[in-house]
Length: 489
Ligand SMILES: Cc1cc2nc3c(=O)[nH]c(=O)nc-3n(C[C@H](O)[C@H](O)[C@H](O)COP(=O)(O)OP(=O)(O)OC[C@H]3O[C@@H](n4cnc5c(N)ncnc54)[C@H](O)[C@@H]3O)c2cc1C
Image 1: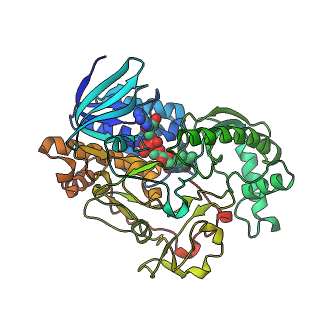
Image 2 (image 1 turned 90 degrees about the vertical axis):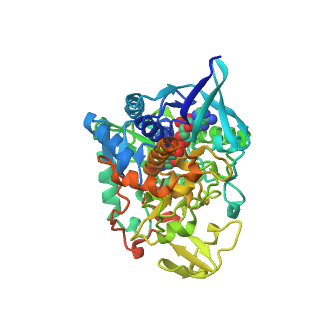
Image 3 (image 1 turned 45 degrees about the vertical axis):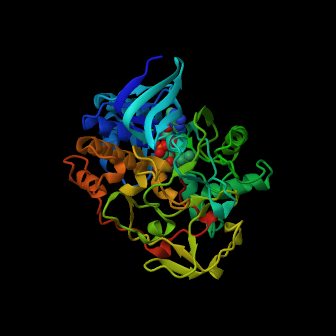
């Protein structure tokens, strides 16, 4: 089997991997990207998570602009991507950057000598082969490369029995009349039935549960993204509503359990949608995601760990390379009756954010394996947090960068890195950093992150505005409880 030698090997072709490969390629590095599936986009396209949340800038802005030009994106809650065309556009951008693509190729192991990664061992239909590289970028989402190379990894939350965030395999439904649904939802919001209830979909699912058409909530809300290019009166939508709880994402038997559970949920939900949701009477599932819908797997611990507090207070860093504008709202790992864990607990009040003595947490189920004690702290939504370059540089490994949802954060703070826009931006930064390392002949630990920031901010087109002067909602408008969902990711 043929072996390869490149300057930069990117493992994983999701949002982070594609952005990293394109930017390494654009800087002249001989770059290869391997992807276990036969198309790019990761969870965004291959798990039908088609609504891009987070701050748009840099590569993700360029990508979305190109999709809009072709009519392959539309505004529906977020910027929504046509999943199949979205894959194609990413492929074009990778090819234009001169990057070599290896589809249907899985990273299975590595060869390391004295902490230095020599090669990635990959598998495809040709068998096992090695790719040697000067620099490697782990964009597998799951932190496979970092883990195989012996990096320090964390997974799940200690506060929640080590469980990972719930997984959701999303699906695509055709034949939905979005106009009819919106009219019904608007009319419902003016009725008494709406008072004190968060959403129309919550109310409709409650009716289905009361009538025993559903055993319980799957997730207490519903977010449907419109597929661009389909008409409102007979639209395709993507829905990431199925949830498996108490997930152990590094246990293949458990991942299979989650998948089978969610396949059953999909079939049940199709019937519930048809019966209870106005406009969905003729809906039908036409595709289901081909990735296991993992919101978080491993986090590869780096020179800095982004913390809950950073996200809450809106920390800024000299080597900040992207920004996070979204609230701290992790999905509940164990309960289908709770939406988000939208706060953290500290012994003392934290300056500059919303602090309440813990007794105010009115729902103790939010802390199934620990007491909600001290102070309950929620985001300062008038500001934003930055992610420093050091989160991309794994401790103890010298020629690897990470990008996307596996970068170095705490469990709660991972919401900051995992949305699609920040994942793209972290990949963009990793690609630029890899290029700079090669140009300067230094390893990632020795590269000054301020230089990466400078390059990103000064790029002529599609620069990353790292000080966007974002005006956020006032804290009093915070959505507090699971049942009052407005959106979920
Ligand atoms: C159900 C769900 C709903 C979500 N909702 C939203 C939302 O509404 N809006 C939003 O902005 N974000 C949302 N997110 C988050 C977002 O989709 C992901 O976190 C984001 O796609 C992360 O990008 P990534 O490139 O880091 O990883 P991924 O998208 O996971 O991509 C990783 C890629 O690497 C490949 N890969 C993995 N392992 C290997 C290997 N060993 N060898 C080769 N290839 C490999 C995979 O096939 C995949 O293509 C959601 C996530 C989930 C699961």
